[in-house]
Image (cartoon, rainbow, N blue to C red):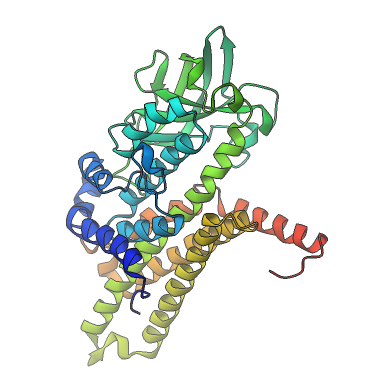
Length: 391
């Protein structure tokens, strides 16, 4: 099905991302995967086109675009390489958090370098003992004079050991979400170290490692928002994740669309029993399901992005819906594309098996889909209790 018709300004944004992805990412994606190469140069080239600060303020080097523009950009990038697109999503989340919650001094200090990707950023929330239950995190930040001393560790951190800055949620107060604050920690700070690179099912061209804080001393002004930022870290992290959930869903959509496009060509050209595969009713029916899923995913994703742009009261629930639906169903689309290719789909050279591997983790990160169901269910229960009825 053709891509939806967009207004000229919106179309130009999509076409710029599509052109960059096809020329600078797609030709190298399989090689990067095979060699576990982290494409820093290409990402900085994307940053020069405004893709590292998509919805960051223009006065500090951002593009000043909408979340809706963002999900469209990430879909195009993911059609070429879901892994690079996903890392740019995480980096954008960090850039937006510093821009949105930092003091003027913090914004001017860090955001321009993040928007250009002179500084590559990592998001540090998950811990070995606190994944989905993020409010239970135990990494501490103890105030000592004009410094904070961070101690603890973060798990599954994209860019761990490679990134230049780490946006870290740490406990400055009592147990629970209100005792958490956010810090920006620069690589090279004494006491900051990293575990070995994780061996993963997918995402081979993106480093993932534990980030360890062994009495890491940072100045007090490393706390995001300054003194007023104390205790706001959990809210900052969750607000960042609303957009992160949309972006990672867009990465699933882009990867699934690429897999579907290949399957459509393959089943049209490949013959079996004297006719093209697509003439077989079961194959045609599978393609029909896949195409419908992609279209439904895109519309739900755009709806949720618009809700985030307009600060709709249902934005959190809609972001959770989009993340859950798109990451689950688009993974199925990619898996179906592999199946339609038969044995060829299982070979690395086709690129389909890489898409399947890379999309699987999207159902886990930025809040597992089980947690998304909890978020949605809680919101629906509150709606019913308040007598609001259907949306």
